Amino acid sequence: MTERGTNTYLLGEGAVSVIDPGPADPGHLRAILAALAPGERIAQILVTHAHKDHSPLARPLAEATGAPVIGFGGAEAGRSARMAALAGEVGGGEGVDEGFAPDILLPDGARIEAGGRPLDALHTPGHFGNHLCFRWGEALFSGDHVMGWAPSLVSPPDGDLTDFMLSLDRVEALGPLRYYPGHGAPVAEGPARVQALRTHRLGRERAIREAVGAGAATLTAITGAVYHDVAPALLPAAARNVLAHLIDLDARGLLRFDGLPGPETPVFMA
Image (cartoon, rainbow, N blue to C red):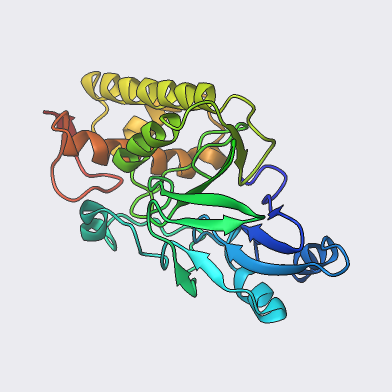
């Protein structure tokens, strides 16, 4: 589910900034160091979020170069109060880098220098609570929040669909930037892709409400109704997305759980 792998970006010349060093792969570490020109050094290591395909190589790279690791916070930072309360009750936790601990915390709205230009941090929870996007001139390094090749997985409690939709609004408001995602090719028309993702999520929401109205009364049944054309191997991931939608709809008073969210917990129209 990472397309061709994780994109690592090197910004600037001389004192180079790295965005998303990637998974714990010695070969990838060697490739990052080999990409430096003679006399260049890595000045800082920026991490969009604490998934195992983005952050684990940050510490080995820091040890090899002396550069600080910069991020929003640890693996549980940035969770909404609702998701913090549901943690341990709704499963999830896929691919989380539990040991991620940045040396420098970068809050929402912070500005630092990268490659001789300002780089602005935007806290964009949704795919992951501690997710950051980075604006650098006319570029937005969008991590796993906005990708061109596929929608992001939103898996509670690390993923929060309510936050995800609000974060889409935030990046769209930045205007016509070119997006550089964590996986896949650059997105030339960032706002158009944001609009497409919003339309996709609203379509899923509509399908879920229609399934419940037609009698699908549990997460398992709703997933089967909404993703009836999906390969069985992909249904567990689909169920995580449906769960995110159900929690969001419950919070908005449009559906109700009869108990804690779970695969067989009854769901009904509010």
